[in-house]
Each structure stands twice: as structure tokens, then as C-alpha cells.
Length: 411
Image 1 (tube, one colour):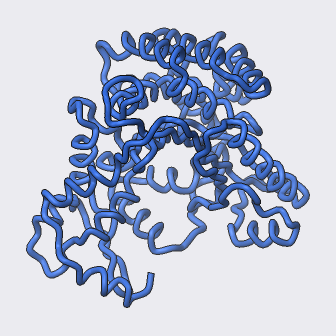
Image 2 (image 1 turned 180 degrees about the vertical axis):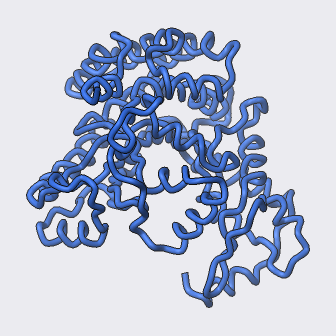
């Protein structure tokens, strides 16, 4: 963004709390008929002969361009530590989502492999210390903000990778197709997805205390922007608007430099009497800096709590989650299975149990078995159904995770 553009935007009328609240609520929840699914899939990039070396994203893009291996059907982006992300647009056909992203993953992976690089499907870098390789103002500000609370933010930015599943937000009505019902299901399903896909038990070359160390890292960063949104309010729009207003401001952007405040929430900024008051553009940018496990994005919900998976198995969390939201029988089974799990437990407790014990937690494991069996039955594509069934039988039914295998091999 140019300095002139920033000057124009900061000259806009300042916000009030009421207008900010209404803006957030309207922007984040735009009702739509549940029909589509999308995926944003990340992989760590590792040198096969020097596992501690960081790979510069510009070098990767240049290599893919030379080899005519740039993605053709998905969007390529890079995380601050150099991880690759491929993302699909929302599509009505899960097979279309799989074919598009998997074709590009194979193209990118093959080209990198010829140069001694590999795409690593793990939730956390198992060897390297965190180091940011992208030097944009956004990531510089983010690092400064997170450093106010410790080092977890650097680990999150540079050393984590995930599978993010995007499902339609739903209709403005009651019931399983309604946005309130889908918002609740996403939050209740989160511990099961954390546990079942736990795939990050190694840190600095050794087992940690966590099966999903990635989730532990995310829990340890700024809680005002990374904790789950409170579920006490039956209106998700109001709950999200309060969450966003009470989250700390990552940066106050200005011509020439960005200022990273200390402890300033967006609500505080609106109430301030300084020369630089927030505008609607500042609020829109603030919303892009919030990272709860379930994030509303207008027409869809983004589920952000799943560890990266190896190879083509990224489709398993996407297919299973989509079925639990959009197949009527699977949806009903999931809601019934999740109800007792949440009856006497808080989100903080379940997230902790999911990321440490994972499927060794009997209550989470029981809910996971029902959810994955229902999700398997709901699949209509033979290849995708086989992948979900194989994962369910190899891990969920046995009460084990990929993290357990990695720990066993490391000890």
C-alpha cells in the first residue's frame, strides 16, 4: 500500500463502537445455502540433505517458474517461515477440490524433489528453530506484537503448518443448515479434529509433551486473537463482534512506518482521543489479523485447528469435515456424539486434552469414532471414501494418531 493511499484512508471519518459492531457483524456472516467446500493446505519446505536450512520463498517461486511447475488450478502463497500454501476456491464438488489441489501439489512436489527439497506434511517443524524469511511490514508488526508475550508467536509464524477447511456459513434460519447451528458445530467439532489429526509431537528433534505441539503453540500466543470465540451468546454475529473489538490491535499503519501498540484493543482505540483514530479500513485490516480456531469469513467458516497431513491425505480432514456439516445423517450423528463431550467441559479443557492425550482421551476418542464412521459412510466418491475409511481404520478406530507413530520412531 502506498503512503498516499494510507493518507487517504486515514483521513476517513473515525468509527464509533456501534458502527464498528454493526460493520463486523454484517461483514463476517453473509448467509448462503450450504453447498460448497474449500481447502487451504500448508506444507513445510525442507532440504533433504540439510534439514536445518531455510528456503527463501522467492527462490522457490523462481524454481517453479523455470520448471513450468507453478500451480495452475490453485493459489500459491507462502507463510512467514517459508512454508507453502495451496488454496482452492469454494466448489460444490469435493472431487473438483481434490483434483485441483492434488494435481498442483504433485507438480510442485515433483519440481522441488528434483532440487533436493521436499514438502513436509507435519503440523510443526520437527528440527529447526523458528526464523522468519518474509520481511513484509505485516509480518514484522506481527512478530513485534507476539514478542510482547514471549516466543510462541515466532514458532507459530515460522514453524507451523495446517490444513484449513472452509465450509459455507449457512442460512439465516434455525436448524443444522442455519448459521448459528453451523457455528456451534464447528466449535464443538474442534477438539475431535485436533485429536484425530494430531501430527506434530516433535520439537527440536525430540518428542514434546504434546501430540499436537502446533495447537499448543497457537494456544500460547496472544489470547485476544487466537483463543476460541466464546459460545455463551446464541447470536454468533454478536459474539464475533465483541471478540474482534476486544482483540489487541496488531499495528497502526501509517505513511512510512507502522506502530505496534502495547495492550491496545480495537475498542480502546475507538475510545481514544488521539490524532489518529481508527477508520473502517483500519477495522477491516484488524479483522485479517485475528486467528481463532473457527473464523467467520463472510460466506464461509474457516476451521483452522487441524495439523498438516502427509501427501494426499490432506483430503481426509476436508472430506470428513464437509460430510459432518453437509450430509444430513452424518450431521445428526456428529451433533449427538459431541453433546456429551461438551456437557461438563470447557473449551480450554477439551483443547488441552485433545492436543496432549489426543485419541488416548476416552471421551474424545468415542466422539471421534462416531464422527468418522458417519463421515466415511457419507462419502460418494470411491477414491475419497477409501482415503477416509483407511484413515479411520488405521487411526481413529484404534485410538491412535500419526503423532503416536512419530514418537514411537523417535524413541
